[in-house]
Length: 423
Image (cartoon, rainbow, N blue to C red; front, side, top):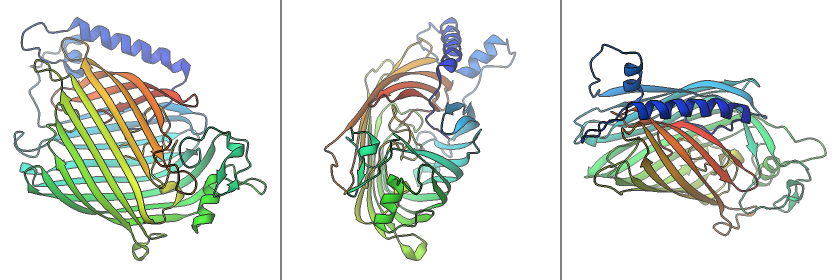
């Protein structure tokens, strides 16, 4: 499970030492031959411990893991583990890499989450299955609706009603069950048509700052829109069209990905309200070097637009609402949200060590969401930018360990850890 983690200063020294050791290992074992063979964590382990095993052969599958460790004052210390796996279910020349991610974590304040996500291609790319299953007890840090809000939250107005609270953040605790599954059928080379369903159920919702004298953005929005303030569902059907020419999913060197879909929430399948949303995503990967494909310029756009109906507050699209919760580096998940939301990011990826073990990225992103009465969309943009290091975990599946640092507005900044690229 790839998530954003803000790390306190005392942990930065630990990560700095780890980074220094990894850089040293990468430089010590750099290859100088013309083939520029890559070195990953497994290769370095063998060399450091003088393993007698033969050189690793390209496997059809692999599993990588990364501890999920972090700290946040609202959730306490977080400990867990993330597993990712990759496998080719057919000939590599005609079949994309299938990937899956399984993660779980628990915090000192009783928050628990288990999540499984997958993107599977059958032989010859005839079928593509995408899924996201999760069960969790969550605390989210809410900052209200929209972008471009500079005033303090005691002046924040939702639907003309002031929240009248002197806090800058509104913690919300709830239980969450999600089942999201789509199946795509290839109808022409690189073109797919898909359908599926998304079941999102939230219960035991508790506004930590809500009391008899203060109201919160969640309470005001839910009351105004006619939702129960303690539980609601967003259950709907999905219909998508997709175009995909990426050479690989974990870390593409070239290709295009585009997906356009409609989500229809219906009360007859348990949704708390009817709604129609337009879902869109586009990614482009441009190779910058014929000699070294690790030089890549990448672009990402993600958008979710409410066409009609109503959606619950915690279902509003926003920062980190993409499938792997990787958008919006520089801000916490859910920092900005709206009935309609758009996000764009560009990133330059490049090698650092000669053997390909250490790489780097620089990136910048912007996001915009509707404000109180569905206004202000695309009028206000929230920017962020940063840089990061990449350590090659498995060269056969291009799995990277990613460590990024990003800075946004309103003093927002932090380290963001994960397996595989953000997009």
